[in-house]
Structures are given as structure tokens and as C-alpha cells.
Image (cartoon, rainbow, N blue to C red; front, top):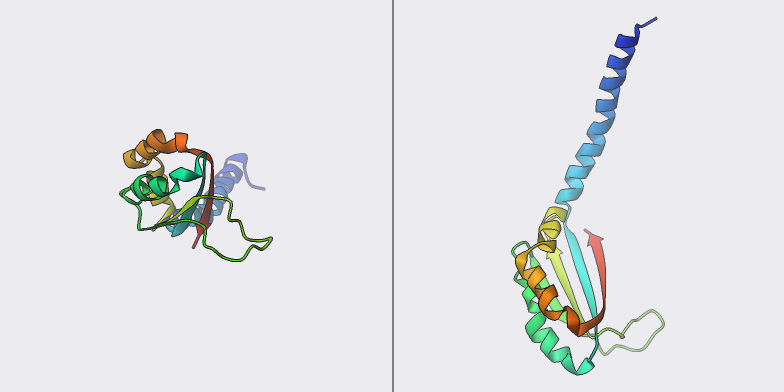
Length: 130
């Protein structure tokens, strides 16, 4: 029978070995490309053009943004599965989750929120791993 010290030593090695796959997965996830989709519902629909052309492009200038696209709802047919209720949307591509995390505290992103958050009544975000 093993001594307590041998048992604990063995368990420590086994625990460390069990953590390696988790650590490896966490590192890979941090490098995983992602898409950050943001939808804005404005207090005043009359401000849509200003918000689309002046405000939202600030987000595309954040240093870790790979690709940036902004627009308004397409004039597609009304169907139960289609949401045309928002005024402006942007899609931001990041090379990694780390880049998206840096974006969250980027001074330009924070300035955008401070300067323009009073214009929207609701914002909804969808993050997608690719």
C-alpha cells in the first residue's frame, strides 16, 4: 500500500495532467476568431443617419478590429423570423477573443459609449465564434 505522501504526490501529477487539456483549450479559445454583432434601437429614429455615419464608425477605428461593417435593416419581406425593429447595426470581426477583450476597454470604444449612449434606448450584442 502506498504511503499518504506517495498518494498525494500521484494525485498532484494526475491533477496537473488533467488541467493540461483545459489550459490548452482555453489558449485556443483565446485565439479563436470571432464576430461581434451589435444592434441599436435609437430613441429618435430621425437620428439614424447621423448615428450611422458619425457615431458607429468610431467602433471600426478601435485598434484590434479586423473588419467593420455598419448598416440599417434591409428592406426584406416581413416574416416572423426577421427583425426589422432596430435602426442601426454593426458587425465587427476580431482575430481572437483576446482582441475582442482589448476592444472592450479601447479608449475609442469607451469614448463612443460616453458620447453616444444617450442616443439609444436599447443595444443588443451577439458574439459568434468562427
